[in-house]
Image (cartoon, rainbow, N blue to C red):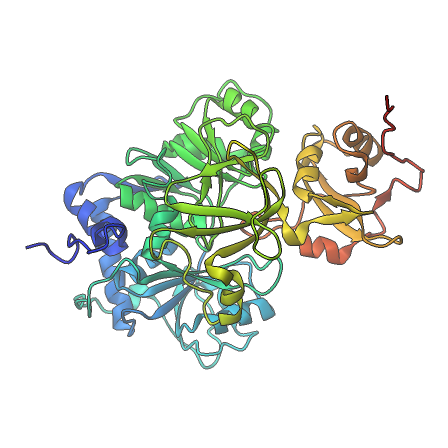
Length: 542
């Protein structure tokens, strides 16, 4: 007779629990390959599958002693590291819901998220505790403090894992099912209050599992350099566990330490989000550029320098389109050559590009991407405590991404912009994404954001906010001349502002809302002041 972990479901689209549920997958590989490494840390420490299970079960028992039950929400406010990984696994081992919180949050943003979680218990780093004293903590009652000690705000109980009495782990009330909620991951909140994405085990498994990211295998060691509260930070440890593979857990991405960390931990795969690949390419060439075991990198978005990255570092480049709410509907073949492509639709997913009425647009026309899958629970099942946002996103039975795309006749998808980031100048719709791609092609530019700012003529003017490569300076006039040779005249920025570093979320997304709020500052260069203009090219008619 099959046990609860290996029992099959009537619907063939649903894998067994030991295939896609964290508790059972960890027990399976601790049994099948107990001494093989699951995780390597930057300090040289590593845990085998057996040790990971033992640590997880002990931590789960400690949480159980504090009253955590199957289905409870447990908040985690921790930086990347062993405590964060162990908290994630222990919460899920109990069948409870893991709710990580962005470590940059404070004030009203933190207050909103804490209230939204419905968590009564939070696992928190000691340095973050004082921020809880500045907010209304809603239903939060107890803290488990990791790292340094902290003064606990009145009204909260506190404990430390090392002082809790050891006790046997009680059995589950029922088996953990693939459709049970595994985590609530909060969106970046760059366009409004953060929303809690309800993610089932099947969602996280489908997001990057063996049938989705088919190019990643159980032999790989995947670098986890995105924070635990990001889909990459919480998802990669789980999907590599589901493969019987391993991870290298890094506190956060640092350009000057990247290759040393990759070499020391023998990573074979990594995820390069946002400007990470640009930062690495703009480092001086080295005789050790190919002295590593990396065989593939997911570059999101794919930049025009992808080919240079492939050649210089000897790494196959893939790209994808994904969001926390969905499960990688679009992915590429290795080393795609079409500039700006995200790839093609993977099996078991339906993708359409539609207008504002959800009517499909023809190939070559820009439309909003909407998505659905043929596997139940393979995408988010709602925004927690936010039925209005859930209904808006899931209208007409499709998830609406809010992203504008174009599809060519061959079925390749090209990202145009976040619909809310699009710029409209004098009747022309402008993709901030496309403008930014050309700006960072300039050798002096490390990173860039293109935003719309109000025009005295109505609609928008294009503004570029740029940060220089270390040791370089940016001449705004020279930059606009450079762009005039690469962009249509109406896309060339009128305004250029040079700052040391762009404001970003801890998930490396540029905080354009902050830049828009600041607008045209006193230190912003305006090319109309020296009267530098670019006009439509006059074409002769025959």
